[in-house]
Image 1: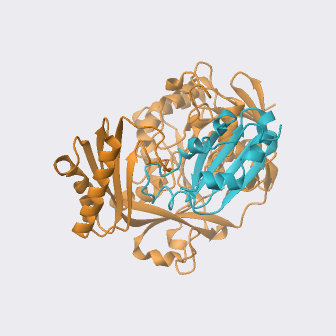
Image 2: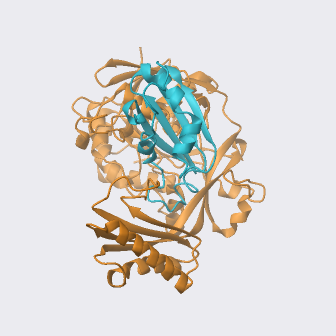
Image 3: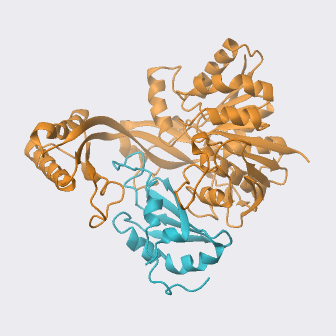
Length: 109
Length: 444
């Protein structure tokens, strides 16, 4: 079992109740592995305990970046949330704990 | 070929001061920009202004300007900042007084106004963007309404010769885009250039987040000399391409990786980054290493600016009460959970009206709640937080947690408590034609 952390790095930002989390390939050659494995469905499942709204994915292939937008993931946002991390800044590290599935699952880049 | 150098002096209101000094000293900057205004800051500042007509600007304004003003004059660096917060005019007066004390006669200070649109909003008609309701449902709890303004006021101030420009709410990238438009004479409808200038501002506005701050992950992403993290500057050409860099000898790093992480920070759809002056499109951005800690950035595009401006509306939402206490050693998690059970039952017995509650074990499930525990922690910290209608109710939350000292499980230590009013923000839109950016210039 491989964690996303081995292939990617990540940064989380917030806009109101929306959490935005980028997933960036360490090696451009791994981008297709990310694109095939880090799907909207898997991210939704991974954040099932946190995200209540829709999950969207945007792609910047030439920079090796996937951008995830998690709606209704930060209570009502940093100004109102009671959470210890109201910005959801820690969520980038949570993202990198996503399991990429068994070796060989992913298509070669 | 003319280039313009813009540095980032602060990425948030409490940011370190010495990197700005280092950058102004050694960076050969034409402009230094301090971005110090978070979403809620202006609502809090508005409350301070209500108490004191000369208050309501950034509390660190004097300290920052004292550290840089003389150096800026020596190096010929102009200052642009949103430290004016809820009262740019009073901030301008404060900087003028400081300049006189420091012996800097002739300093031109501009205050850019027009973002305060509280009196211009039609509360009955204005819709809250976050949920289906009108602003009028917030009633008399509304404190402030500030539109995200564009570059117009700042460009006007620069054209008038201002050495220091103090704004309230503007789109953060506009703080950087404005001097580029001023210097290069970019047309206000050259959307691609405005998009590229917005990209440069977006990359710089969080200061250290471009140079290796918010980035290090030992063994995976190591960053040198973080304790002396330097802030970035951009050397911008008339065609909008820029080289991102930091001064020699400063800590941190500028790499493709640090730039890629910051590129989409707080950006949702990369093709539609909506700003007051342009809808920027980052989908074709190119990043290229051109030297040690030097990355060239190009390729942003733009689309026509939106007809409406986003408005942040601050209002008194509720109160929040919190208490924490620690447990250690074997059985720490079990004793922490027992403490939570006791507190939850106590709240019921007391009939304490709570709108929303969170019961957490810091170290187990506070920022990353999941099923099960990966490993047994050597210590945990109970965190109980609740939303209430009144301050007194909020105080009762922390008080109950504190009573765990003598009424709770064995070995509870280091209890703490707090209660605060929650000033929250909702957003709405305003027709930009209703806003009126204007500038007041004063000379020390």
